[in-house]
Image (tube, rainbow, N blue to C red; front, top):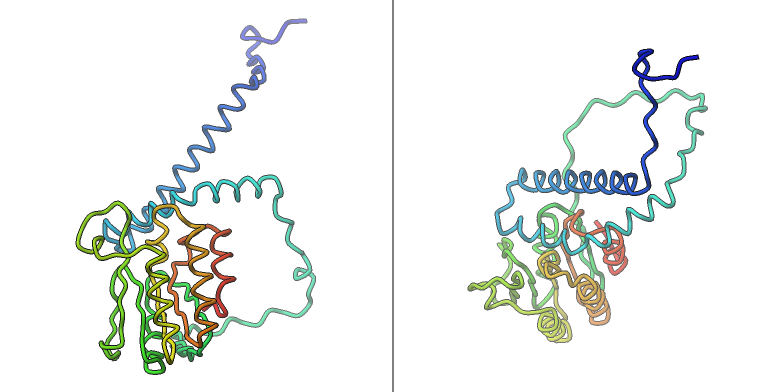
Amino acid sequence: MTAEGPSNGQRPPRPPPVADEEWSDAYAEGYGEGLREALREMLQHASRGHTAQELRLLIESRLARIREDVELKRKGLLGPPRRPSYGPLFRTAPAAPSPAPREAAPRPIESVERGVSYLVLEERPARAVELLRSAAGKFPRVVVVTFHAPDLAGIEPSKVTRIPVAVRGVVGAVADDALGPQEIAGRIRTATEAEGGALVYIDALEVMASGGATELLVRFVQWVADQVARNRSALIVSLGPNSFGDPVKSLLQRAFNKVL
């Protein structure tokens, strides 16, 4: 009986990898997948026409929530999702034919009510601005917390208080005029507690969290939502659907009466 080896044309079996090699292989594979995911995400942002400053904000926001994303991935690996139900496969009724594609009808603008907070999930502020314009006439004052001022056509300028938000660590005219969360909260308190209340519009949560202070940001949003509820005011927030990880996004959504 001949031993297996090069003499009989068979490849000798590969010895099993040692523990250190298994660990290094798993680490390298995970590291590579993380790089690929990050680069794909940046390519998507770049293809949407973001400016260099906006890209920087998105990257800083992404870096700030890496720990949350890693923890979410770890829990997903420890407890994989359940297998889908196969009930629909055994239904005897045939599926209805797909209707011919039609142009999407414009969505009706939500009627903003006093004491209610609205979260609009959108890539760029658009529908939230529509809500702002449609509801501004119901309030004696409007507070706009923003990084890029939205188009406020149709709103009386004298009733608008604009609060600029800037990236931490960036020196410039906008940064010099910008306020921190505590100062912004003070301005909102003054406006909402005045006679007739106020309509508060915010589209700069991603910028406010650029320094990694997501916990402070969540508390700020919860406070503003409670403030408008107690003072018969209203809150409209525009937020990118992928701006934060699932744990933070869940906390933010729970602070609002309506998510659009």
